[in-house]
Amino acid sequence: MERVRVRFAPSPTGPLHIGGVRTALYNYLFAKKNGGTFILRIEDTDQARFVEGAEEYIMESLEWCGIIVDEGIREGGNYGPYRQSDRKEIYRQYADKLIEIGDAYFAFDTPENLETLRTESEKSGKTFIYNASIREKLNNSLALPETEWREKLDRGEHFVIRYKMPLNEEIRFDDIIRGHIVVNSDTLDDKVLFKSDGMPTYHLANIVDDHLMEISHVIRGEEWLPSLPLHMMLYRSFGWNAPLFAHLPLLLKPDGKGKLSKRDGDKMGFPVFPLFWPFGETAKGFREEGYYPEPFINMLALLGWNSGTEQEIFTMEELINAFSIDRVGKSGARFDPEKAKWFNHQYLQKKSNNELALEFREFLRSHGFHDDINRLETLIAMVKERVSFVKDIWEQTDFFFKAPDNYDPEAVKKRWTEETPKQLGELKSLLSGLTDFSPASAETAIMGWIKGNGYNTGAVMNAFRLVIVGSLRGPHMFDIISWIGREEIIKRITNGISTLSNY
RNA sequence: GGUCCAUUCGUCUAGUGGCUAGGACGUCAGGUUUUCAUCCUGGUAACAGGGGUUCGAUUCCCCUAUGGACUACCA
Image 1 (cartoon, rainbow, N blue to C red):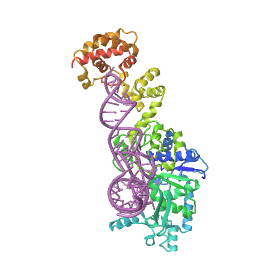
Image 2: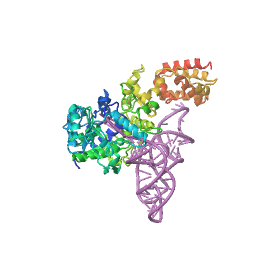
Image 3: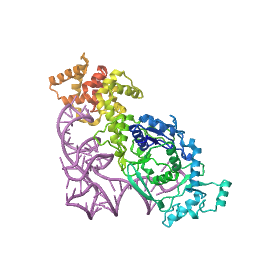
Image 4: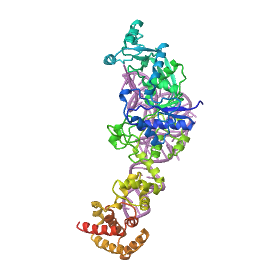
């Protein structure tokens, strides 16, 4: 096979959606699997929709994901420039070449005029298609006498260049994922290739750049499938070899219908973007929500692709090795926030207590607490397996840092009895006199005291937990009290007795 | 409306002309636990429908239904 060169070609019109990230990922995996090159090309031919900051956002997102760009606006390369607005001059000549060979023409119709025609034919139940069926009647260089349209051009009248779609021709092509597809050219319209503002449309720029950059495989979203016939025609008109195409299935909403959108994330409280989007209407990002890039990528890779084995946890290296484009599915995949969480949980479990302690220390700081790293490691060890995110650690351990400010009424009702104050009073003196406050020592002492007095273990321990934690949750009591320390424990028992005895 | 694409448990999916249709997430139950969670064990649950082809179709073909994308001087 010729050498593999693939590109990810987003438009800088806002934050990069996870569907876009997945497209980038599949391109990247395919390139690396085949020893090829991954190119990032910015498609900013629509000046009106350009959004400040989007380009940086795209690059930062890929970087966070661990998707390494080989050629691009920041990396450089031998096929630049990699931003279409910087390639502006090269497109017109290709449009002109098409006109020269008779496969394209100048059109002078105004957008308003076309709009009117469209609504009119809609009213009569017909579809308006700007093609062979009607172009002779419109305002273009095919319908007008040459002297007339040349004069318009000379006068500087606004024009676009349209592709001249042939009449009644079966256009046949193959897609790696979808197989053979046939479309009749009569259902296609004479697409605008070159706009009146002097910029090419996606269709022209895309084909020209893919050819000039020697792209071997185009891997993009399914929304492009309907324009593939046009693209194939363009390659034919230019006499170029077309790259191979693979159209990826779409990412769908977690509930209901339709493709995933920004709104879904807002509505259901999960992110649909890799990073926080800080401009204008802000949007949540996976990174800021506490996801690690590895599980995020892992999750995305498995949305629409699988290795054919039962392996689900993959490193990027493993993904590259296992990836194959013909194992990509055909139907849309629904994004599942629950499974995304599970992936993060899996990765977090593999982190060392030290790594997590370091991360958690930063988090604690924002809550106004601090502690030394060794103590935090001990703490992490107690709750690690029950959390999916570093921020969850706080929810599991807040009572280690501050005394409860209220007691769960349900738990009080269930576990606070007439004997409880007396028992906890005894426990308090026991702990005051205990020299070794390690978990093991505390356990021996407390369990001995309970048994010696014939108390009910569950009753005593739950009441004890209630005054220390404020509710019936958390790790083993002996680990908790040893970490918190005698003085604070005594204080909490005292407070608990005085507050709860009034019930 | 037109064109194109798709359809296996609730979700992501494996799979093949003959299988008890497999796994994961979720969910449910049991176990472990002085609590909660984790964890372990087990269960639940699917080939959209109808016609063909065939000795036999989830698998191949056709139709229908449903879903989706596109239908801009946006990408």
